[in-house]
Image (cartoon, rainbow, N blue to C red; front, side, top):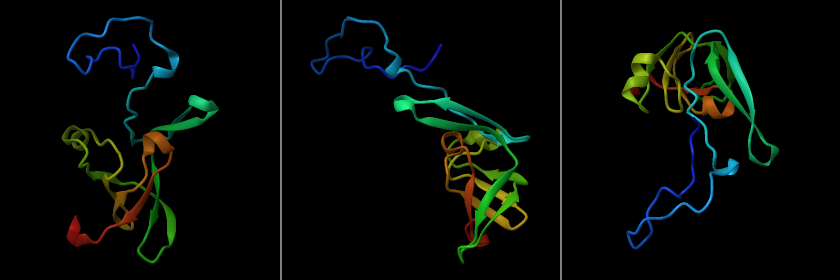
Length: 130
């Protein structure tokens, strides 16, 4: 069963019911959230609307970390410290945008959307804010 983004299940502005007048369309189809975790790298490229491609990142080991001076380097992710998006993601170690991760360079905040972009970009954060 896939996610469906149609509006036939909603009610009219007057509060009345909307009757079904057609079947679900492929362009209304959505997808489940990609919950990126730590582990051996696993990606999936899926075709999207307009012939575009989306790289979905399921598991990852490394991240591109930028320091305040602008220097960027690829480093290993040691662990997930905190995920403000969802309390359950904290426990499971899911990486989304805004997640605080531990790296050999220090703590960093993820600025990319791994499940949508297929890569993890992050910026170092001062120790006071962690």
